[in-house]
Amino acid sequence: NLPPMPWLLGTSKKSAILAAENGLAYAFGQFMSDQEGAAIIEQYRNHFIPRNQNDVPQVIVTVTAICAETSEKAEDVALSSLVWGLQRKRGEGQQGVPSIQEAKDYLQREDKPLLEEMKNSMIIGNPQQVKKRIEELQEKYNANEIMIVTITHSPADKIQSYKLIAEEFGLAK
Image (cartoon, rainbow, N blue to C red):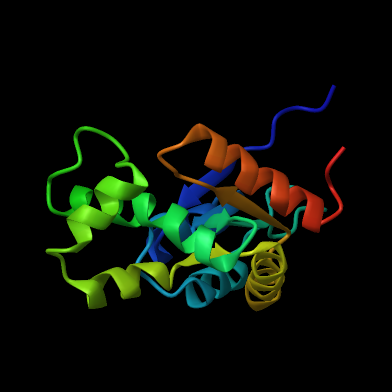
């Protein structure tokens, strides 16, 4: 039996350096960060102190990804997550992730540029677009792994998103 490998989840240079100085693997939570991840991960790699002789820096990048059959459908599905994120930033959203229609209604009275800025930290699209963006992200961060977080109102949309991504990467059974 192998002992469990501890990882430190963080979103800042402070957490990256803490992981590095303690010889821990680092999971960068891009899905919950407003900071530039490449510089944070570089800081982690530059400060890494191995605990054991063969230890090397290990990086997971965690990103929000929403995939659907078409990019238009993916954009619609993503609205729930985006609006919920906006609501939480404003101290709202206690009722949970809104439906797509509730999100569209909410957006009638909201700041669209802020929403577009939030979308930049997410991967949204059809299977080919999502795969391309995930591969670009992996290369940009030189990550050992990519972890996907998919927040949707509908469990069926979440399952479908994971299924489409798995199929596009050839991981589906």
